[in-house]
Length: 343
Image (cartoon, rainbow, N blue to C red; front, side):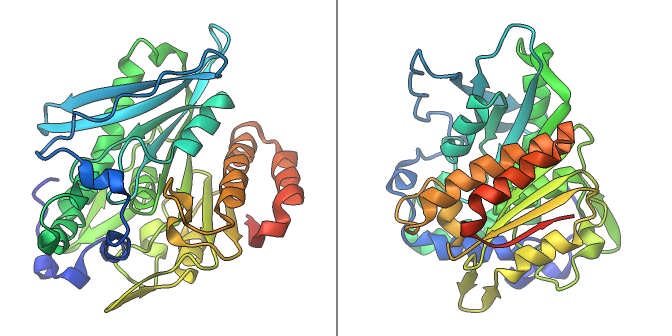
């Protein structure tokens, strides 16, 4: 599937993930300083080592530098591994970052999940990671456009599946609960998670299917629309696993020539064919509020805390049938939420 036929020569507005490119341009100004310091080269393997884990912390942090020989592609990852009782099965979240991100991002989620007994594997996508922010600023648009091409969108899903292969085959694999494996991501990463969960896209009449049946739930933060189309049902109707959708009323992507309102996140929720799906739309906020970036709004710390708690409540509902978990979350955080739906 690497040599899919191209359609319409894939002009900028025709990219399968055109919304992602728009988001990347919106984030290009003010990208985190650390992003501009990424090493040059095709595979960013010389990343900052994981910080030592305090002895009283409930998890370990391990950086993994994998390589997929079949694609000749580096797949770095960071694992947050909970310290649980020996023999206890451990659920796993596989997380995909947004465009320009890295395995070190979204640490507030990885740490929280691990402290609550969920292993969290944060995959870095070398074709759309923080290296995009380095180099000549005048070629930034070209680099971002390349990162939004079909080939990279496909490789991101393959990165996720490859990383899942590797962790399941590792010495930690026997501890992982195969019935509780979660695809998760923010922005471009949310689209990656949706493709791994069963979203289908078409190219010249051919259906591209990248679903990984090992995923049994998905957490989707600020998912942009596929194709920029208004009817998402043909793409998302076959996503049947439980899904959590997180967004905000000001989760808007807007640059000259492209506009994606927060209502697009709701349309993604509506079109997803999950047997259980939850939507939480926080009041205010922004698209970057859910990242580790600073200065993303005064309400960001409260929203991040609410997102942490909601994700675990959702997984308890999805995996254990604990309906009280979501009800308790709503009672605690309803003051932050503009819209909350459980279907």
